[in-house]
Image 1 (cartoon, helix red, strand yellow):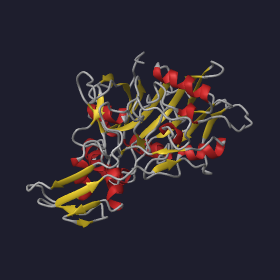
Image 2: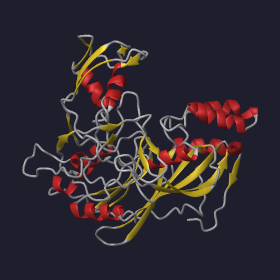
Image 3: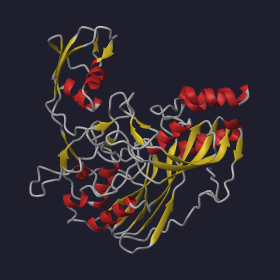
Image 4: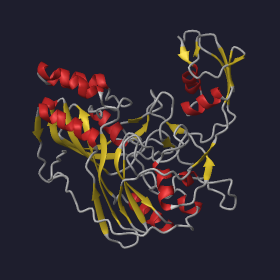
Length: 436
């Protein structure tokens, strides 16, 4: 049984009201265009100004540098076309649009070396469609206007290249009978080698959909009602708008930062200060384009955006080899908590992209604990298969009634078991009088 510090986490009444589901037949694409504040979640993709939004037809004719060792073809091409996603390059290779030394190859892992001549044409984007699917949903609250869902880990929020089915949006469309439309897919911010993660970039702000042409649809149409997002590996609470009025109302609250969002994580190590406010801009990592990075200094146009996270350590675990940390967001940038945790030197346990590797976690834990626990810790760490991050609490003003409502869901069993095992070794609660 997972027990959290009740002074920090109030388990509020769940108070869902009986609801007879009605079909929402008038919820059209116009309701899903990008509103100000739409990207204000810890995992919402941000469009970086100056970055190209469509790479269709871009050509690369180049010889691999003579001093370059062997590299994967998809990795090398991605490094030569600034901003293009690995997924897009892989699609181009598999479509037969890439040749090496005059011979077409459809193998994304083909190795190239110095002196090889590569010819590449970036493939057209393939349209994505959010199709209703009968997927079980953990619905925390529902009425005619909003839906609050407890998302499991490993579920993608909306369709993206590599994750076209089995998404939260697909389950919601089946549940609510919302209209389904397609759109020309956009680039992906990937967390994995084969570029099949869940993050899509927004259409640029000056690009507006053509409402009179059903073949030209807005990006948001593949994620109806979604005003904030959670990473594929993140579990927890997410609110969905069920009509245009609710979408606009919730988006305005995100814009004004009045939405209450509390997250908990298990980290590798303990921060130097057990509580603090991280005010560090976030932008794409120049050394690894599949992740974001905290970039100290003034936010720079095209490079980074303002990002603020508040955190406090709830418990020090396993002799200080780990910690249970609470996070509250003042902004909502892509991978904000994950990037800020890495900046603090406490990457989330299980976050392979941001430094919380199994090797790092085990090394810290074994360094802080007696040898008698090392075997157990090795087994514990080997079973972690996602970043230990959970969206614990969500609070907002109901867009129709004006009532302030709050919901809390404890972390799922995988998170709870890791926390319980670390507590069994050693735990030290940390108090923070009036910090938040």
